[in-house]
Structure formats: C-alpha cells, structure tokens
Length: 217
Image (cartoon, rainbow, N blue to C red; front, top):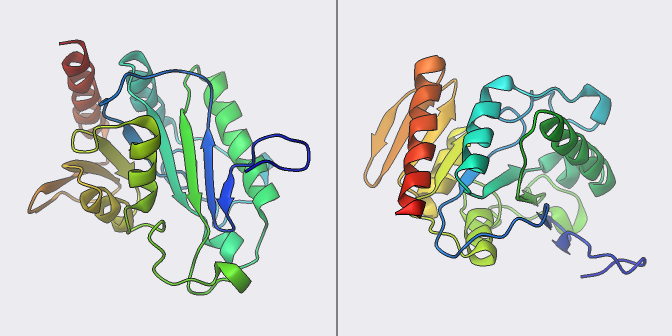
C-alpha cells in the first residue's frame, strides 16, 4: 500500500504495521531472532508515545549484535494496544519506533523488520477486534515475518517480557524463548528460559552463535 506521497505505507491494514528496515538480504531458511519491543529492547514506560522518553535496555544490545554478526534476521514483533485504545496514533508509534531504531544504530546494531499489531478487544472503531490472529499470544506476526523473509521458524528464537511472547513463539513453531525477568518452564515442544543475569544472557548469546555456525555449515 502506498501513501499520498507514493512512499510505501507500513500499514497493511488498519491495525497491522509491517516495515522492512534496511536492505540486508538473507538466504532462505535462515532462523530469526524475534524480539518484543517495549520492556525488552527499550524500557517500558507504559504505552510509550514520546520519543524523548525512550531508553534502551542495554541487556539486549549484545544479543542483537550477535545476530547481526551471524547474519540472522532480527525481527521486532510488538503489540500496540495504545493505538487501539486511542491513546496515540500510528504517527506517534512511528516516531517512537524511529527513535528506538536510531538509538540502536548509535550502538552499532540494527533491526531488519518491525511488525506491530494494534487490534485489541478494548479498541476503538475498526481496531476493536478481540483475539486477532496478529496479536500475541497468537502467532500471526511471526508467521507473516516468516513468509516475507523465508525464515526457518522452527530454529528461530524469541525474547520477550511477557508470557504472551512465549506463547506466540510456541504457536509459530519455535522451540525456545527467553523470558525477561521470568522463570524457566518446560512445555511440550517449547522451552522457556529466563533472562535475568549475565549467565542467562551468555546462554542466549551461545544459542545465537550456534545458529550462525549452522548457517555456515
């Protein structure tokens, strides 16, 4: 979809934002590093809508850097009920997201795709859709990214700060995820690993490095 300027509009429908960032090309069947945004990449300020308030969580920078080095796509998948509820619009989301990307760039790391879902049962107008397939814990954003980037979802990893992130990963066919400030849990076909301290981060970095080695083999 194009806007009035002829530029491609990231909104594929009223409540779904899909934006390809940069021009890095990836061979098919690569795994991805899926990341939640608010509370995972940046500090969650409760419906963040002001770019000036955005602050990165430094814990995720080594993981993004490792994925960049390993030529593994880094994909942000974020629920945005603040848009659905009318607290702010897509323009504010774009400004905040642009600031997140800018701060990451200043740290020498990059994101390859951003997907956002604004549908919510408490939404306004066309955004008032409960249990939309794109909204986590449903797997729609991960599956869509998988189609667009020809990803191997089974080998992909997800990091988030809510169980909904882990559930979306499991439903998309991933085998493991890291839960920020969470606890380990084992489910049929899916392992939740905690991301609390440096040892947990080392485990995540080792998993990313292993994926990079698999890509080269």
